[in-house]
Image (spheres, rainbow, N blue to C red):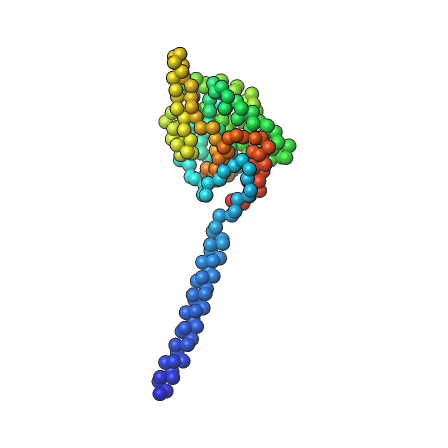
Length: 216
């Protein structure tokens, strides 16, 4: 009888320990989930963010000034990248003009040093460094202009979910079809999302300001 009572009393503390351990494990999982869950992004007007940032491959392009442009250059600040070409009849100049207006708004707010805007030509055969630099810096001397060979351009655009293709124009020349979205690169050098057309300067500047204040 005595032994039976001893075993019964032994089970009670063990059951209590199991309950406490289960509660502690559940609490730990809940706190861990809260700690590691991605912060909710701010409300955005023009930008579309991916569920999770996308890692980019290493790449090497050439800037209009002759310096290299690599993945490392897209770290440390938010970068907006647009792929086009200087002979583009409409989308590229319109987009760069919108970027210029958004850039002026960011400068007035003292935020321009935390953002950069890059234009990458997908027409390296015609867009010489001189031509590319003159074209982009007409909109702003602060913008970065670059291009590269098709191997590097294709690798990068595919990783970013963009496309481009050259189409003969029937007169011995060609035009270039390309994506009209601008890519958003976060300060960790990852693709965060896109600015999709139609683009408006105020919306671009407001969204970038909100992203700058977000601890994503």
